[in-house]
Figure (cartoon, helix red, strand yellow):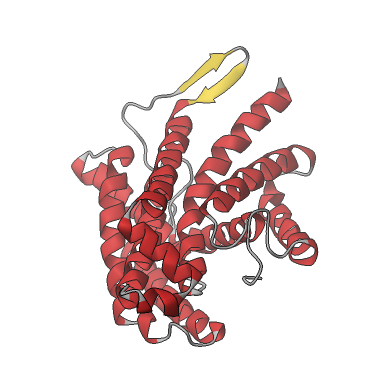
Length: 288
């Protein structure tokens, strides 16, 4: 029963990890930009959910819509105004730019909100249920299910919509897409906005699970990076598989090694993957 509980916890954690990572993977795969801002976008989404609940009484599950919309707008403007100027430049150039923007956003949050950890204390939490000996944390389960719905909607957007087809076309061949009449700059901005939207929505859900602080941004960025390498760059399905795999590995690793070594386990896994399978589980050659 202990292993079944750990398996459940790992799947819940992995579902949230996948939601954190799909936007990061999409931006990296389409724009070839390592978005260092991503972790701070997640934290900003958590703060939006926190203040929406504290001051307006809006549940974080509902704040997903607000956080997603605000972060989409922010991401769209940032990409169109700044990052679009260096798309196609060496990776180091885009890395330095997004790193500088991350410093501005993260330190801005530190000035505005301080480094103190906050958490959303629901007046009427869903609590837990015990079924067949398994403890089901309902708030986390619902958060994971919503994360799955968001990830599924993103997959459908890419697979079934004109904008999604344009994004996929730009990812596969930017020049050919431009010749077919696709506005590449606009698609880049929309893609970056979607990545920020997913980060903000994930942050809103995570506000019920983890403490909120600007100091958490680097950990979220690390998780997104590791999940992308694990699942395969540019693959939504790979981000889902990678997130679930990382959640399970960390949960079982916490049992055998200790919960304080969760991030260490993840980085060891990253190193092994880069050595033995740099394309990831479902990635394509050319991205490693």
